Amino acid sequence: LETFFGPKPLAGKRAIVTGGPTHEPIDPVRYIGNRSSGKLGNAIATALADLGAEVHLVTGPTNQPDPVGVRVTHIETTREMLAAVEGALPADILICNAAVADWRPATEAGQKLKKQAGGMPPALALQENPDILATLSRHAQRPALVVGFAAETENVIEHATSKLSRKGCDWILANDVSPERGVFGGDSTTIHLITQDGHEDWPTLPKGDVGRRLASRITDHFAQRSQS
Ligand code: CTP
Ligand code: CA
Image (cartoon, rainbow, N blue to C red; front, side, top):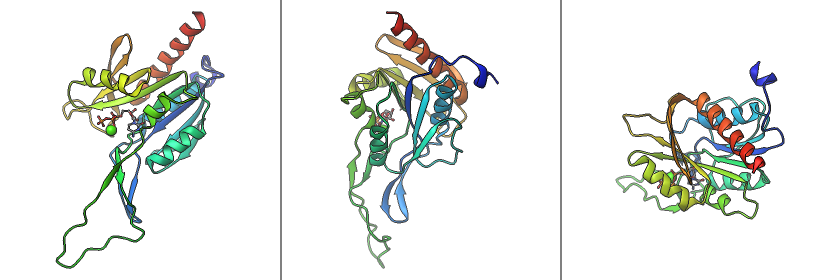
């Protein structure tokens, strides 16, 4: 009920959220992917919509139902994700939560690759994918607030802080994915919010709460901007 009748401080704001994995085809039946569940991207999209934002979620293949009250575009590859995000501009807020495949097969075989009798396995040549977060951070129509994620297994704050300046985004939500702390696909995660001013350490929270906390931080950010 709170979500229907609660305050809508993000009314009039447009947000784009990327979520899920990307799939990069090897041949018609195989792909390179990763274990992203899509749960956090969906939770963020939902939380922003609940506060009144007009949300467009661009998501790779997941087993999650589409969030309610959000426009959803389904894509498979990183290049399709980039095109869909650019197609969703202009926006005030961009949250790049997707676990994008860093590399794709340099060529996609037109037919299923077959084993050769007594032969060698095929060599897979890879090519780097475009960086959606870095591209949008330097885009002519750059959203006012660009937020990235960083999944790290060691030196979490240090690596995420250097990612912030390398990508040119405003905030990074770093999560510790070392085997002791959390795993892809889990229901909770431990976030450190990195900004130009330093870092804020959040307790381990269910992903729904991470989405709501981020949406409320974003609300505060725009409220402060409109006062100054
Ligand atoms: N990202 C992106 N496009 C890519 C790769 C990453 O938009 N081709 C975004 C992710 O959605 C995330 C952020 O960049 O918000 C950081 O992703 P991450 O994988 O941690 O950073 P990389 O630059 O790919 O560095 P590495 O994987 O080597 O740590
Ligand atoms: Ca990466």
